[in-house]
Length: 192
View (cartoon, rainbow, N blue to C red):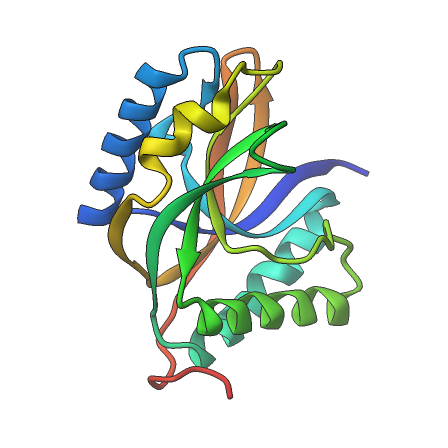
């Protein structure tokens, strides 16, 4: 059975996206050894599915429509740098998302849908963030080099659609192909 690597995410666009890209450019000058995410592949991951069957992709795509009809567009504040697992030994440098209660509700609704469809996903606790870069090796004094950027605010991000992406890994990095998409058109306030 053919499988594809897939994830559900919200694409980024608008003025806040331009501010995020500018911040990432400033960071890349301060930390040239970090492998920075290409702006065209930047997104907000809501559920990483890994390798799944084409049949499961179709089921998820159909079920995403019902989520889109329940949730209105979601707005979050973008700002504050962090790292996984820690600033002392980072593997991922990220930009935080604040005031994200409705976003967390949306993500929980997505994982409830996956559970009902009996599709497995990476079930780590959801920490709303945008991945900016990855550290392949230890970066000396990274916490000190990130310090001037730690409290940087980029504005408000409006999430207005969900996309089920297929991710193809290539030598030049991942290529993300949209397979299914649904707008968030529900009543304001989303699920309570």
